Image 1 (cartoon, rainbow, N blue to C red):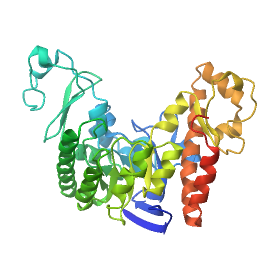
Image 2 (cartoon, rainbow, N blue to C red):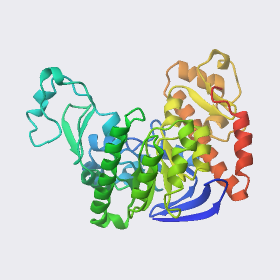
Image 3 (cartoon, helix red, strand yellow):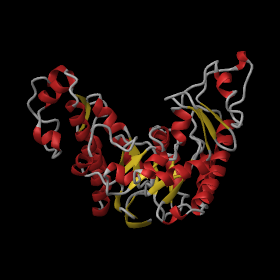
Image 4 (cartoon, rainbow, N blue to C red):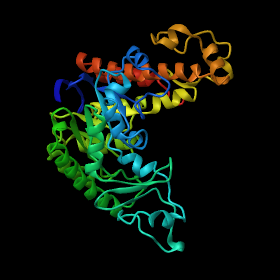
Length: 399
C-alpha cells in the first residue's frame, strides 16, 4: 500500500490517494459496508454505478458464516464478491464485544465442555450474570448467536482470519469500549489494545500476506484526552501501514478526540474513522484529518425507508409522498431518482416489495459517497469551508 497527500486544506484536512493492489482510493472517501461480503440488497454493478470506490466486510460475521477458510477456498473476498476494487476487513473486535450472544445462567454447562478456554470459568449460580463476552490479556471468548458454540479469538487469530479473507486493508485486533465505562476500565482496555496491536503486527509481519495486505493499528482511549493522546503515540510509533480511530463518538468528540489523535499520528499514513457516516459528522471528520470512513447507515436507513436529501432526511412512507410524482431528489443522477417517483417508491415500501428498500439504499449510497467526493473536490479547489457552510446551512438533520 502507498499513501500520497495531494493537497492540504483547512484544519487538519487533506486530499490524497491510497494505492492498493486492486486500485486506488481517492481520499477523503466513504467506504461502503458489505458486512457478509455483500452490501445488503445491492449488486456490485449498482455499487459501481453509485460511484463506490471500496467496500469493507466484517471479519466476525464472515468467520461465523461461512468461515474464513471457506472464503479463502472460494478464492478470497474479491473473487466471491466479484468486486475488482480495493477491499477492507475490520478486526472483528467491535462485533465480539457488542454483538456476541449474551451468557445466561446455564453458561456453566457450556463451559464444562470447553476446559481449554481460560476466560470462560464456571461461577456460582447466583453470581452468573448475562454478558456478551469474556476478555483477558490473551483475547476474547464469546458465544455464537448462530448455534451457541463458544469461540476464542486472539490478536493472532484475528489477523489469520483476515489473511484468509484476503482484503487489501485490514485492522489490528482491539477492544472497543463504551464511553460510559469508568476510567479505570478504559485504562485497562487501552493497555490491552496496545498489547494486542503489537501482537497483531508481529504476526502479520511474519507472514507473506504482509507483502500484499496493509495492516492498520487502532487508537482507543474513550473520551479522555490523556488516554487518547497516549494511544495515538503508542500506536503511531508501531510500524503499521495506517491507522483506525475507534470508539463511540458524539458531535463534541469529533471536534476533540479525533483532533487530539490526528495531531499526533504520523502525517504520511492514512487515517480511517470507524463507524461514522452521517453528513455532519463526515464534514467534521474530514476537517479533523481523517481520510476514510465506513458506516452501515446509508443502507440501514434505506432498508427502513429513510433517504438523504440536500434538505435533510425524509421517510418515503409518509402519507405526503403517496401522490408525489417527483424523484427522491430532483437533481440526483442515481438510478432510483432517474427512473422512479416518490409515489412509486412509497408504494413499494408500504407494500413491502424488496425493490423499495433497494431503491432507497441505492440513493443513499450514491448520496453519501458523492458527498464525500465533493468534499475532496472542494479541498483540491481550495473552498472546503465554503462548501461545508453552504451544505450544512441547507441540510437539516431532522428533515
